[in-house]
Image (cartoon, rainbow, N blue to C red):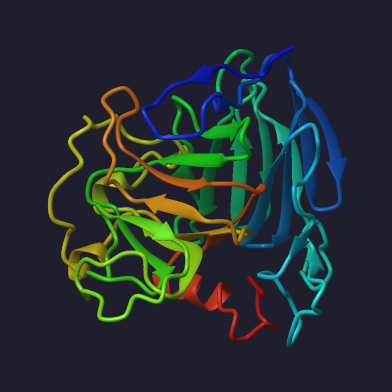
Length: 322
């Protein structure tokens, strides 16, 4: 009843520690809950999707043993401050909890939608667990591709507690955020160690890690990443050559797909990679890899970069609270 297989990707880890790819071993069992649904994909892994705002959806991938930590100190909708004991991760208190639509597509995929943001879960037995995100363009009336998981493997759960999440990217996509960081504002092509270090006298161009980290980034697809058909499917894949200078910011702001934010609700030591690592098998991708904890993340729709920033603000907890 294993829902995955072990792989060796060359990363150093303790003896005997393997990563398991989240894979659908049977038709997932679907259970509806307030604002979303839960899918039992087999092998003890459970995927939970919850629309907490019209433009924010929460994703949780849970092990058979449940959560490693059921509290959050990073999400506080409508709260001026958090209690010392934190806030239950699965709580929806303080969120708007908009009306949603849950449906099956023609190919059997599960689709959860608000009026502005939707996520589709592929249900093909034997395939890796994969989510595809789309946003509703109110000008054209079309649903357009926003973000998609890496088709060759997106979710990994380690026997040693590690968790990983991989998403597809295109050459020229821009990335911002991650907290206090050295180098250019556009993080494309970089990999960042998410931990706190008192880096006295650091190099403002290259040093990493620094003192403050934040497991959140904003993605802005380049113009060639747009979805001209409006079907939510990406254009043809590109080769693995993802190196090169990031595009100038003036080019990033013109055209392309909608901007989005991804926030990982975890304080574990982790790494965010925006194209530093290349792999001929997987093509171009970005990744989040944490040493321990749960895989809980929020996807926020812009569709403009400044809109994502406003919705993710922790300074004004009366807003989204993420």
